[in-house]
Amino acid sequence: MRHDEALLLHMARAACDAVGFASGFTFPDFERSRLHRNAILKAMKIIDDAAARLNSEVREAN
Image 1 (cartoon, rainbow, N blue to C red):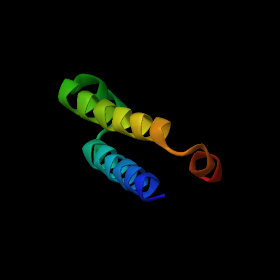
Image 2 (image 1 turned 180 degrees about the vertical axis):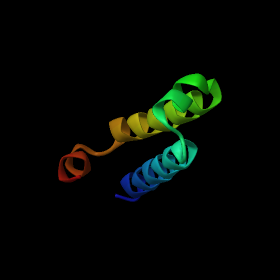
Image 3 (image 1 turned 30 degrees about the vertical axis):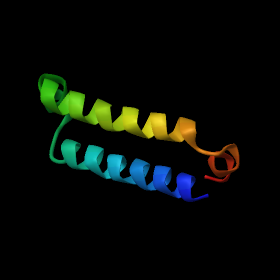
Image 4 (image 1 turned 180 degrees about the horizontal axis):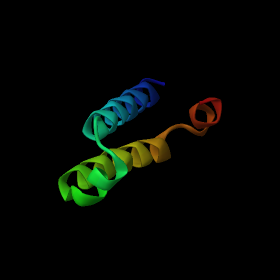
């Protein structure tokens, strides 16, 4: 369970990062800023990778 808790924390931090990177941006701003797009996509990739490594019971419960 410790491993899953660490993964969930990692996912939460990446989600907070993505929200922070997008803060104050409109969609057209997002489309124009390669830096912000890449930062947000990287955070989403971190979430995806961590979710894939979660125990199936934890994944189903959340």
